[in-house]
Structure formats: structure tokens, C-alpha cells
Amino acid sequence: MKRYLITTADERTWIFDRPVLFLGQWCLRYDRKHVWSNLKFEVAVPYGVNPIIKKRDLDYLNDLNEVFLSEISGMMNKLHSVSHSNQYWNLVLGHWIQRYLRAFYNRYKTIEQALDRYEISGTVSLEFDLFELASNDSIGFIFNVNKDFWNHILNVEILKFFGVKFIDYKNELAYEKNTKRQYVDSGAVWKRFLLYTINNILPLFSRKSDAFLINTYLPFRSEIFLQLKLKQFPQIWKNRGIPEWDINEESRSLLNFPISTRQNFETFAWRTLSKVIPRCFVEGYKDILMDSKKINWPQKPRFIFTSNSFDTDELFKVWLAEKVSQGIPYFVGQHGNNYGTLYGSQNLPEIIDSDRFITWGWSRNTRKQIPAFVFTKCNESKGVYDPVGDLLLIEFPPAIRLGPEDTWFDFTKYFDEQVDFYKKLPEKIRKRTIIRLHNSSKHYSWFDEERWKDVDLEVKIDSYQSKLKDLIAKSRLVVHSYDSTGILETLNLNIPTICFWRNEFAHLVEEAVPFYEKLKEVGIFHSSPRGIVEFISKNWDTIDLWWFSKDVQDVRLIFCDQYARKVKNPISVLEKIFLGI
Image (tube, helix red, strand yellow):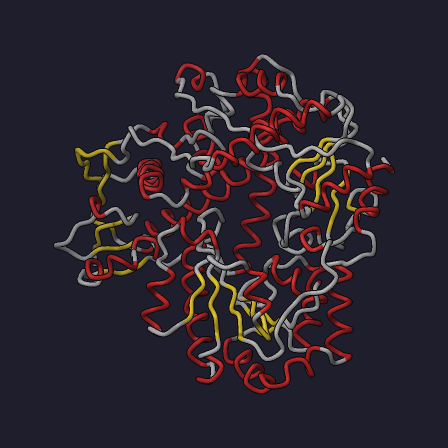
């Protein structure tokens, strides 16, 4: 049967008088169920959700990333009349290249698979300028991958690349061109004064050779203490904003990337790259470079240390790349989980291009990857919880479509398992269950609260309005529904913790699996809603008895020593790492 292809949730591109094929679950907004449920529709088979295929794709894209980095580095040098190394450009735009390849590969393979599997009668194309794919900066790209207008443009371009003839053009703009980025007001006068003091007064007490610490992921007092240990006046360096630039088509026409007539993903990725690369790297690079030379940060810092700014802080990255090229030591602290465990994260720029990567316990290279401790909890000796309190279920953030696989489909299956778990709980435990939504859920159209209320009108939901620490203090058991930073933190603090998720350990690097297997052996990890509910039901009234048993505590300590270490005098540990340059 022929079906009309619908690729996004934008109903201006829908048709209602014939059978349709939705390209993915993202088309089916929960708040529009009354519309799409009346259509004669099918949802296309998701791409890349098989763990074996996902790992294969990650390996392929990792190899391709090296090729793209080398070519893009050369082209950036030519465009901006500089002669920087691949390392320099990897520090500046390496994260974006990885995301570009993964997101575009997913869209390409999804369309390719749909064309192979289904007979398609047509699809709608709205009016657009292809340069609308180019965000202003890295964070803009991350937000764009879930937006209908951006995916609509990309899907149409992929269909054109495959030579399809059934596109119906509609005289309506895909994107409202006068849309501006929304900036949050800095708020009260005292906040503006504090920000002014941080940015303009405190730097007067810094020296040109002071170590530069920014977004360290350490608690505030710990970071201040660290700077005092380093014998420098404490500074609180903050990210600086960047302007927005207009597209310069002439500059982009100079980006002459490899040309091929082959119809494959690499050809498509090269053809579209000049239309997609963020403006901060093309139109804005020279402005950012100039600002990086004028900013009141140390000119010749003893070393640079961050646990977060390496990804989307465009000014910092250019400043950093300049300093690293001058031989300034560069240290990176582990930012949460996945490092050392997640397959596909082994070659991130902060791991490859830093002088030392300071981990929460693991190390593959004892010279470069230095085990330390859980940064976020270094000032807490033990956690606070209530042995007769509630059950706290911590939820995964809604899917960001950045992977080579269909992350929206995966998240749909994930949510189904959350509901299954909740429904299976005995009533007395279910009534004491609090569902904690991720604070990023407000940015995405998943409608978490509405979905949960449709499951149970009396469900207790915390929509990120309470401090997580306060919720844990009222709970006897914390249930993590995904492989999260939270698991490392609650295990580190010896708070009763269990977890469960789909596909068990398929997402892990090989050397991490034995440590997770041990968690499974003692009941900390479960692979199904049924299994974890049976465990909770059996141990609900004696959680502490189970948690503080020798077997469980031994496994917890083994796991924490590898991935969530606790040390005495943590700031002294960092001081020794930094001063042992």
C-alpha cells in the first residue's frame, strides 16, 4: 500500500485524506493524539536501535570523524588565514563534528531505510533557506536537532539527495525568520551587582600566571579552598556570552570540501557541511579570537582546569586552544558518568587533547588518566536518607536526537518500562513513590506530567521543583532508571540504591561489564521491571538489612573504587595532581 510520508510533528506538512507513514515516533505529539489517532497511519521501523548495529555505527563514525576533523581543520586554516594543528581545531569544534556526523547519519539512514521498506506516494516541502540549518553556536545545534523546522529541512534535503520525485512544494515558510534567541534576565539588582563583581572586581586581584579554573564541577567552597591551596586569590570565572552573526554566503562558498558522485552518507555529509557548520566557527571565529585576546583572564596561566567548559563555551574553547598551542598545561575533570564506561565516548576531545584527564576512579592510561574522586560529593562524608521513608524514582531526560540510533524510539520504550514498573508496585509502595522528572524535560515536548497523570491521577510527581538532595533525605530507597551520574553519587554516599534499564550492559565498554555484573549479583542492578518490583516488594521493610549486608557493601566498595571513589583530603589530592606537572 502506498503511503504519504510525514517526517515531523509540524501538521502543516501532514495530509489527512489518505494512508500515511510517520517517519518516527517524534511525529506523534502526545498533546495532538486526538488528531493523529484518527489517521490511517503506520510508523516507520526505527533505525539503529539494535545494540549490535549501534556499536557498528559508532565504530564507523569514529573512523569517519578523524577524516572530517583533518579536512575541516585544513579548511578552517585556509578560511581564516591561520595555520593551526588538528588538535587546535579539535578543541574548538571537535564536539560539534562528532554530533554533526551522528545526528546526520541517523537522519540519512532513517530516510534510506524508509525508502527501501515502504512504497511512498509523496511528501510535503515547505519553503526554506538551506542555511537555516546553521545554528549560531554549538548549543544552538544541540537544541535544533529536536526542532521540527530543522528536521524538516534536513529530511527534504536527504530525499532530494536520493533523487525522489514525489515532493509537493508548499508556499509556506518552514522557519519564522524573525525568531530571536530568548535571553534570561539576570534578575534582581543584587544578582547583577554580584555578576559585575565576579567579572570585573575579583580579576583585579589575579596574577597573569595564576592557574585558571572555570566550571570545575567542584562544590563552591571546595573550589575556593583549592585556589587557596594553590596560593592564589580565589577567582570565580564565569562563561562569557557571544553575539549572533548573520550568514556570509561568500565565506561559506570558500569551504571546498571533498567532492564525490557516489550516493552514500559521506558524500551527503560533505555536501551539506558548509550549510550547517555553526556561524561561530565561520562568520564569528575572528571576533571570538579577538575577544579571547582581550578578556581579563590570566595571560600565562600555570595551568587550565575545567570539567565542563570544553564543550559549548565558544569563547573559552578558542582561548583554550590558543593557550594549549603555547604549551600551557590543560587539565580536564570528569563531568559525570559515561566516561570510562560508555561505548563510543572513548575519543572525546577532552580525553584525547588534555594533558591530564582527572577521573572519578577509572584509568586506561595511568600517565594521562588520573583517578581522583567524585567531584560533586567531595565535601560530603555520607548521604542522608530515611530508613522508613519513600521510594524515589529518578527519571531519564527526554530524548535528544543526537545519536546514530533512533533515540526517540528508545525513549518511548524506556517510558513504557517506567509505567510498567510503577503499575507493578504493590499499592502500599506505589502510594509512597515519588517520580522525579529530569530538569531538562521542560525543554522538550514529551509532556511527562500529562502522561503520568493519564497512568494514575494520584501519582506523586516532582517536576524538578525540589532539591534532589532533599528528596533523597526523605526516601528509604533511590531507584535510578538509567545509567546515570546519580548512581555514582548515591553509591559514593552509601545511600540505598538500585537501578534498572533496557538492554542490560550493551552500552558499556568491555572492561566495565564485570563491575556492573557484580551490581547485578547483589541486587543493585535489575534488567526488568518485574525483577526489580519483586526485589523491592521482598525487601521493602528491611532495606537497610539488605543494603548493609557484607556482600552488598563489598560490591559497592569495589564498584566505587573503580567509578565513584571517595578519598580523604580530596583537595589535597587535586593539588598534588596539578603541582606534579
